Length: 238
Length: 201
Image 1 (cartoon, chains in turn yellow, green):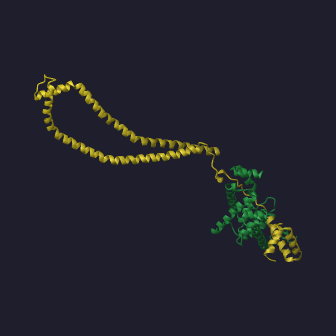
Image 2 (tube, rainbow over the protein chains, first blue to last red):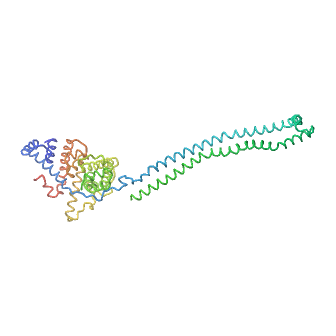
């Protein structure tokens, strides 16, 4: 009896042999006592296992949602808010970082420029002070010459050094209305751009921070909404 | 129980449907695990792990015997556990017999319908059979448990443990032969019915 015979006997016990093989094996079993004894041994082993008491499960193995790895069903708006949170957070970070970087660069570039303009302004005022004295002296005769030409228009003015000054003052008084209007207008024009330039730069500086603030608020609101949706979905699921 | 409908629902993520199937098959799954592993606690862990794994992969079930499919899952869990045990051998906390076998806790073997004498006899018998099963190589044990304890036919066993039909025939035959040889040493423990059964009929 070999291993092949044992396999045949085992398959025969389980009804796994075809009719021809079964008939052939049965014929051998009638004559071969050793083979018959082996068959009975295998049958006993099989019976012992089959009669082994069935063990009942000591507890239920039913799965909870957590064990099954299931997640609570979320509202339809949940993905939108989650996406909004992510996008707004990214935009906030980008705008805040870029604004912070650009302001740092501007500050770094503006400091030497301010110093340079301050120095040049001081230099100019010093030069102007130096030059103003002889210029006034030079201008006075020329003004006197101008007054000479104006004498035809205003003959009552005496051509003296003091008189020239009076005439200048008179003409300036006469043209006071025009002069004031003509002087105030440009001064307004000069001051107006100065005063307008400050809010403009302030606006330019503030607007990126405003965007950062807006993105921060959006991300905060959508984040809180997402969190609230998640919590309520979990509570409902329980 | 409409098994096909429950399987379809479970495949669509219905946990209640799957739990109905769990309740129906949990005894078979646990029984297989305990016979392969020979340890109650590990068998519980393997059964639970098998059901979790089965739920997660139920969409891959393409028909056929659901019981065989489930038993394949628990067999894989048991084989994983045996591999872990081989890598990290542990010393049992339970007291051992002189042979080095664990003394089984009588609480899980207790049957209220049996007298103490019969209970003791049943305990001894089961203990002897489990001892012989444990002595078998893992692949033989798995095949014979599925065929003789769970009553699967050869093709289902082959499908469950994914080996050719010829190999299954060979493993079952050799397992039975080894088991019979092992049980001879417990002849006096076996009740008369078991001693006579088969060999005298």
